[in-house]
Image (tube, rainbow, N blue to C red; front, side, top):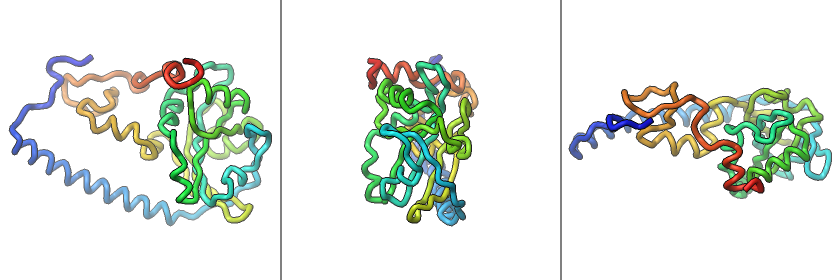
Length: 229
């Protein structure tokens, strides 16, 4: 809960500028480090994958066909629990950021969702919450588990490169490693109160709640944007 003491110190404009300039030094250093990390990522080796077959809206589809002729593919593995009306709120909220992905065309790339749910159930859930991405199912394939997102477990991002009909895995991340790919956390992190999660280092009196208690639930997202509304 926000209290009357949960306010930053009030200073004159010159003092504020000095403090901001000091912070900017660290922000710029972090930017340069991220550039160096990206440069190392571009130099990673890759591993050749077998010819996985997933389920799509129109039936079985090979992994190579998810590229739709492009050379690069980003796949988000969405958490899935059989029998649940509302799936992981973190995955649901995170993927809801991506409503306009056609800009990837000019980079010869696509970005899709793969989940462990049966394809009909997965597509129904996509519509229920108003998700705009293309969904595929790995319910009948080892692809999800092999890519770090087995049934009833976590989420992951994987990146692939295609050379003809051969697909290579080039990068993987999960957990907070996915944050850099969206704008959601970046916007919240520049707010004075930040994410308000209990693990964060904040001044005394700052509002905080449990780590997974913030943000809209999947049901709330569905009520606002999907057929559930």
